[in-house]
Length: 325
Ligand SMILES: O=C(O)CCC(=O)C(=O)O
Ligand SMILES: [Fe+2]
Image (cartoon, rainbow, N blue to C red; front, side, top):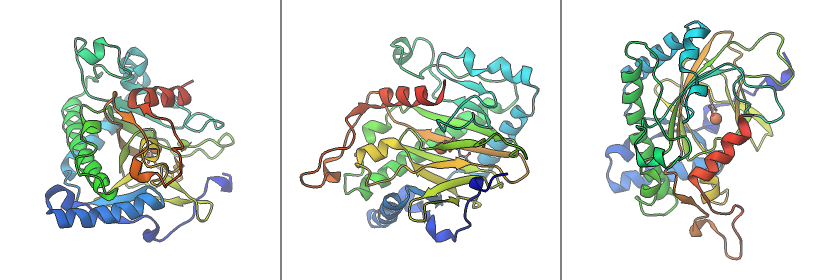
């Protein structure tokens, strides 16, 4: 195993844990206090933990149990819901199906994509909107129910966090309401085998990448593996599981909105735990027609935006093309 796959142990302070309870049921003063903490974390690494998020542990456990049971099946069963069968990129993605780091070997993970479940006659599906369509569901008792309940809960939580981010940027709390309307959100079940003893050079669970969308809310099992790039030390730091929390990170759209004041930071997964690792990221990427462009308040006098305006849909098309060959 090459030492370049290692990361530094750090004290927890470098990735703060923010209690976001007030975003759900606090008064305005309390919500502003949370927003201040979000602002500091977003300007630093754009990576932080949240607690008091309101998502039930029982529901999380159901999602993990369903994911584990699904991935434990033989390949021919999983292939019945292969994402290659879906025009909307839903369903099973085999091991090495994606290359998140351009010059590295494909990722040592298998996954399952779930999104907003839209029938064929939905206007957005008829219009051919990217990644819009129906989910595929395996014939596995309880799978669909758990995923649908979790998906809805995560959508609602994401909208709360976007309200907190609006406040943190001194914007009206509902500034991102249009972005949050009928969002392109993706629930992704991931399964990482243990890192092999003799990997290809650069081979790992998830190649170094930034997330494409708005915000990502990551549920991890109790195996470490996630590493985050630390600009200050020019090295990788661990973002190990902390019970009862989510890891939240900002995607490229937030960097575009804020002209990089808020960070979309490189991260990767190297599963050195020696065990199978399961994780469940939820990617909230917003309404496909929403234009993402530099916020006036994030432009210093005389400065120009680093990124041109782009619709959510076009941005997502560009990002998928980059990682699926
Ligand atoms: O599995 C993890 O811990 C992170 C996954 C990730 O970064 C991603 O899917 O974008
Ligand atoms: Fe990621």
